[in-house]
Structures are given as C-alpha cells and as structure tokens.
Image (cartoon, rainbow, N blue to C red):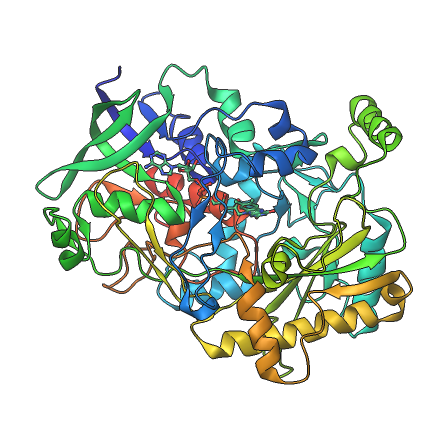
Length: 540
Ligand SMILES: Cc1cc2nc3c(=O)[nH]c(=O)nc-3n(C[C@H](O)[C@H](O)[C@H](O)COP(=O)(O)OP(=O)(O)OC[C@H]3O[C@@H](n4cnc5c(N)ncnc54)[C@H](O)[C@@H]3O)c2cc1C
C-alpha cells in the first residue's frame, strides 16, 4: 500500500480520470486515484447498446433516491449516477455537447474569472479526438473520442424537418457555442465503441510508474493539519487506510458525493457538522447547497416503423450483431439520442431555455408512475415508438445535499426540489406544448400512429402542472453542490481551491455554478482539464 503521494484524487469519474491522466504526465508527480467502484472494461460498457444493461446494474450505477420531493407530489425521484472508473462517462447516453457561449460568459460575468467561452473552448478542444472534418471548433488527437453518429434512425431526420416546420433553424455545428435550433448530435465514441474517460484518458497511461489507481476505495475524509490538507482516509477491502499527501487533494466524487466528503472532513455548514459530532475545520455554509438539475419529461408516440425498443426479432438482432462485428455500425453502436433541438419557452428570451432530445425508442418509465402498474401503457417491447425528451435547461429551483450520518458508505440525504419555483413549471408546460407541435408538424405527423404518452392532460394549466409534477424525472445532470464563484460564499474559487483551507480542490460537476444548456459529461471533462492546468501553474 502506498503511504505517501503528491496528489490524491478522490473519485475516478468523468473528471477524476482526466485529472489522474493529466497530473501524471509529469513524471515527478506521484499521483494516486481512489475510486469507490470497479474497473469498467467490460464488453457491455464498450458496446454502446449495452448501456441499458449497465445502467440497470448496481455494480455500475449508484441508484440514489431523493427524499420525498414536495414539489413533485411527494415522490422519491431516482437519480442514476455512474459508479466505477469513468463514472458517468462509462454508463451515460454518450451525447457530446458543450453548451453555449452565453452559458460560460455568464459564469465569467458572475465572478468565475477565466471561465468565459473563449477561455474554456481550448480545454474542450484539448480533450477531443473528433472524427469529422478539420474545424476551428474541434480538436484532433486528444484522449476523448468524439464521433459523428454511425447510424441515424430515419425518424431523426423527420424530427429535424418537423422542428424546421415549427420555425426552428438548422444549426451547422452546435459545438461552436450556438445551439439555437436543431441538429444531429455527436457521441463520445471512438470507432463505434464507447469512449469513457477511463477508456480515453486512463487506460493508455496505466503503465506510468508514478500513477497508482485503487478501485473499491471509498474515500471517507480528508485529514487536516490545522487548515492544510495533509492526507486522505479511505475504506478498502473493509479496512480503514490512509495516504499522506505532500501537495494537494482533489475531490472528484461528483455532485452527490463531493459535498459529503468535504462535510465529513469538517468543511461545511458548521451547525450541520456539529449535529453529526464533526469537528469544524472551515465553516462553509455553501457546501451541499445549490443542487439543481434539468427537469425532464419523456413524451412518446407510437410510429409506423421499427424502432430500437422492439427487439423480439432474432433475425434482426443477428444481422445487427454481424454489422457491429464486421463494420462497427448499426443499432449496437447507437447512442440514445439521435437528434436535438433547442427553443425559447417565450419569444422575448435572449437564448433558448428548452431542450428536446429525440430518442428512437419508446420511453414510458416515468409515465408508468402516472398510470400505476396496471395503467394503459402499451408493452414497450412490442410497440414501435419514438420519444421527444423535454428538458428545462435553466431551472430556478434549488435543492441541497446533507449528511445522513458520518458513515462513508451511507448514501447522502438528497433534499431535491424539482419544481420548487413555479416559473420552472410554467416554462416546462410551454416546452411540452411545443413538443406536441413538433409531433403534429407534417414531417412527423405522417409517421405517428398512436396516442401520446403521457396523454394530453386537459385544458387547464393546473392539469398540465399536475402531470408535470407526477411524471417528471431528472435529466441525469445534477450539478452545483460545491459551487464555484468569485464571492466569499462560494465553496471553491475560480481556480477550484476550497475556500477556508489549503491544499484542497474540487473538480467535477459539483463546482458548476449554473447549469449550462447542455448535458454535463463534456463540461465535467473540461473542468478536469481546467483544474489540471491550474495545478500546472497556469492562472487562466
Ligand atoms: C445514465 C446517465 C446518462 C447520461 N447521459 C449523458 C449523456 O448522454 N451526455 C452527457 O453529456 N452527460 C450524460 N450524463 C451525465 C454525465 O455523465 C455526468 O454529468 C458526468 O459523468 C459527471 O461527471 P463527474 O466527474 O462530475 O462525476 P462522476 O462521473 O459521477 O464521477 C464521480 C466518481 O466518484 C466516485 N465516487 C463517489 N463517491 C466516492 C467516494 N466516497 N470515494 C471514492 N470514489 C467515489 C463515483 O463512483 C464516480 O466514479 C448521464 C448520466 C447518467 C447517469
């Protein structure tokens, strides 16, 4: 067992693997990466269509559950989150998207110096190995495979045609900071296989003598001498272990667990820590606050052609298997989303606030909750259908993470507030109505053969809101619980250093001050790149 390192990284997810890879490029840095989950080199993770199985497995998904959410009819909402090397990037839907110029310029304007679009773009590009044409917006030769989709369902084109029919524009390259309109998305894949950060960043450097990766290692807390981080305590093989740290600890355990590690270490809201008998090292009220997400509602319709949820034809499965083996093409290489679109819930908004994801399969998991187990929902293995997932990109509602107890193996207490602000409900309602317009536009309407799930809720706003509160889920993009900012109340400063202590940073989605208009894997990877660069001594 290693007893001393220069850098210890707590959590080997999307950002943590980037940190481990980049910091160990300098052979004089001794780097240790501690990950609670297991290695993620299994075939079902590599083959993109295996996503359904890996998401369903407690070996690779933490399956967090919120406390009953009063803003969602007292429902407990389930939150998927990657467990194992690569974290979310090893189980996610593989959509590659960065957000907009506006998102990051807003971060910078709010006090996050160094995080404007022009300043973060080089870090998105540094990671990237794009398989499309040379362009000022993309990187080549980086560790992260970013690919054009190898198979696009024909209804994705119908969806984009329908979006144009309701007045949207076609976006040429949505990675250029402008997502206002419709487009086919890219995927975090290389050669038809998933490219997690474990695969892209970590695997090629595992033989570095100065890098040690320990899986099955649950970080309990950071050990301080005064206010300086000097070590990490973790659980491995049922035993407590410690590593001494000469330079820095970087916490990368994700939005749900990074605040818990800080709190168990004595960095957090003083009164809450004292309730749990924890000695306060730094009284930081913001730790665990600012939890926010993309509220999301899948809106499915039956259609007139085969879609990916209908798998009962052995000949089709065999043909797709062969296509994958011989050419790395076909359904098995598919990522969940085949096209996207962004609109304004209100015409006076400067930027879009609603995102649509077109999925070439039927999705009624949340809708089932609305009807109950015996409700009139068609059998999804026999019903061809597509889904337009409706997401609110800029919610006002905020929740928080608290400690349940001081056991590092306990789940965090997630006080989630999906629709705490009624303005979020109103914008989602408008977003759903526009989704119905897209389904009704000629290019899609001609393929729709069956009713909507969830069904048209009725006339009144109350009916729509009732359905939203009953059926919405999270967009799988929780952020914000160790908020970055220029203000003294923020948890980390713009170089991701935890305020009030020394030798400690946080680098993962928990530092995001305000959700970008994007899924959050590429932003998490950019955050890892940015943090490694700060540690190398570059201030901006
Ligand atoms: C099912 C699913 C689908 C998604 N689809 C997409 C998509 O298509 N596109 C997209 O851009 N985003 C998507 N996302 C979101 C995206 O993957 C995440 O936002 C991103 O991976 C978060 O990165 P992170 O580094 O902040 O945290 P994570 O990747 O979650 O990493 C945290 C790591 O820390 C480990 N850890 C936690 N606690 C401890 C501890 N105490 N000790 C040691 N290790 C610990 C975890 O096991 C995990 O490996 C999806 C997420 C999920 C779950």
